Image (cartoon, rainbow, N blue to C red; front, top):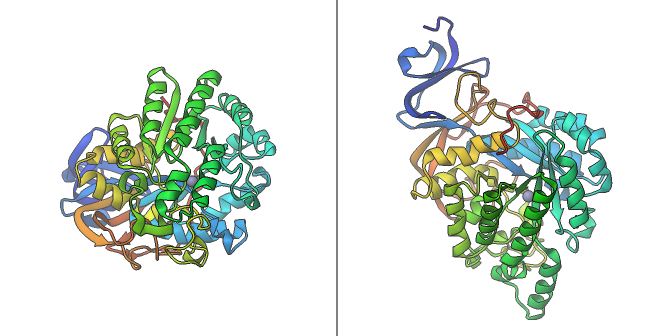
Length: 476
Ligand SMILES: [Zn+2]
């Protein structure tokens, strides 16, 4: 019998653990889970929450966000600090308790590491880690140094940005540079190369044709980067990963073709894995009503891809879900032309992903019987922690893990309107107008209740940079 008291107890819950779903509760002390199980076995605590029979799950981990995009208003570093506060405020309202953010700048990353750590520690509502986007030769030189600093995932724009947005100072990577990065990361314990996989040479030609036809609809954006653009790059990534005996991860995989290709390489034992997004699991290019709000990159696909991505999540070919949350103010997103303005000029990317992540996966996944609650927890939390070296500190309800947990009421619903989000820009997302069923009632971060029934109870800051070591990484 445990004699010591705890800080917090959650009781009367259906707790998702790695050994199945149990009826009972969890106790936490000093930010860490100290007991899981039947209530009679939990220590007394200063604070108690009655979950009223609802699910208690590990908080979601968003492995794919782009803080600092508000640089359209701010310099990148200032934008990073800004977005950590505004966007992780949305995260805790939505049930996300850790985040891995993509660093993206032209300069070397290592000289700014102290700033990057401080930016999150001082401004975030949740613990955080980083990926680095390697798009300059000097970034490739930093790979080993970044691993020492706890960054072991490196993203490559495989051919993307060759033609688009040269003013952003982002260099694309050809097969040669891709080979160099894969080869180098193969020697980093727990290292993985992440890929934006779209063939832009083909996309730019299709785009010229569609523009010449005078097309300006959301479906034209999809037709300008057809499924084959993604398939061509994933095929090459699979072969290069096999050739270098390295590890690869396709971010925001959008097509059924991608699922088929990944499955083929996985069967051969190639370490090729994939993430998809709530948007690709929910929408198709037929959503013309979304206008430029539906412009994301890669673009929305057809019904067959959507179906195949859900299948991939069930079979394990697709093993993580992230959001690709890009925080843009609506004026910048629409380039001042409104929701149905110029589709070619509008900025790609969906906002508010980190806040709709859990509600969409509950609404579209669990409540529509596409995925079990246990599988949703695996692909939105546990696998994300394992993939990026955060497990078992994160991604699981178990003794010794951080007490990052969410109570989910599967019957609670809300319509996504201008008041739904708590981020910098709540006025748009690809889910606007949609009713979502399955919402968090309590978000607990480090053993502290941070949001209860929609009310934010804490100030930002005092959070942890999650430097990732080789330990605990499960990439098989
Ligand atoms: Zn992204």
